[in-house]
Image (cartoon, rainbow, N blue to C red; front, side, top):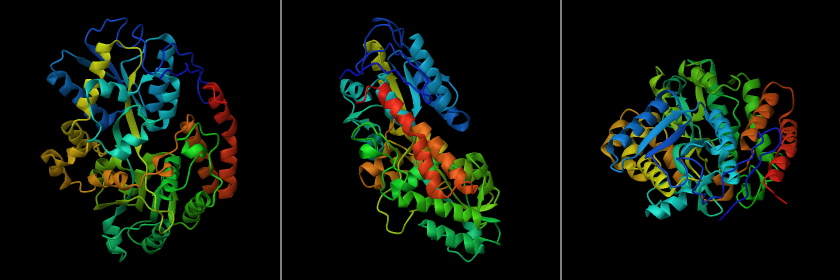
Length: 449
């Protein structure tokens, strides 16, 4: 299916005039060479540093050593997700695109609308590859209009970390972590004045609110959470969203929670130092959090806003996109590398080295995975949460071209409420209103009626 060339407009997306063709691509003048030329090298732009970046480069080295197709992957670190996407836009204008790129989940709609990529399902069908061994809920997130657009790779889920030692000292059962926001408050009240100064910590992060809404089976945006068409508004003006922000504000105002601002590292530091006994955070940093704490860390499911909520968390992280316009030989090489990255062996190594979910469900059956569970038993929780999340539009996650900007605006709303600048409901209403023109500009730029 051919899609229009995408020109992003407005303050949230820098202007683009993409010369790449449709989803199926044109075999001339794009990533990986021109015409039918393919020299056996594919360029892979990735967006992870530290322990995660080291694991990626190790996987690339393994592929380069083991593949018998004469293919070499050149992995190039491009900075964080925002940096990588900015460079991708610039490369689209110059026509000098990489063969494949790692993009965060928030930019899925943008990548789809841009026409920059060949849907991975097309490459999989050509290679005779099946997605059956991959986590169904994860594949579903990256499916747009019934077609798998990208290969899920670094997949995380939100979890509740808690200090088991502090729980025991406060007379709380360390094997019975809180399940709801009210439970967290009750535990924090009992923990206050004990071995930790604060009961709870969380950075200001709209990602966490997105997760609460999914667990509450509540839409984040309209048009079936952006899955039934282009979203035209965010649906933050709701009793559920207000209750979440009111709870959070009340925790800070009561001295039960510490406001560490927007830097997630500050939240992690407060928890690992023992200053706060509970923390909502991504599973992607599980190993770092466990290794950096001098107490026994408990890992529990993400809390429900209300008792009896029937939804479930949605994934975070990123996926691998094959850039369009490559010759067939380059496309085959790109997908061969993707398939390697999704093998049980690669996913077992990736998960145990980092804390990300093993997308290939057979990875957990391997000895190298099970051996690590003795030290990090919480590794399986994130994947179990995603697998157990019931299927539905609200629990698949909002698909919207301006999701990065929406998350920033939610951060503004949270901050305004926590600092007492606005009441929670007003902060949410104002945040949603500030996105109206941004969403309209995006939709106009992709030719929405």
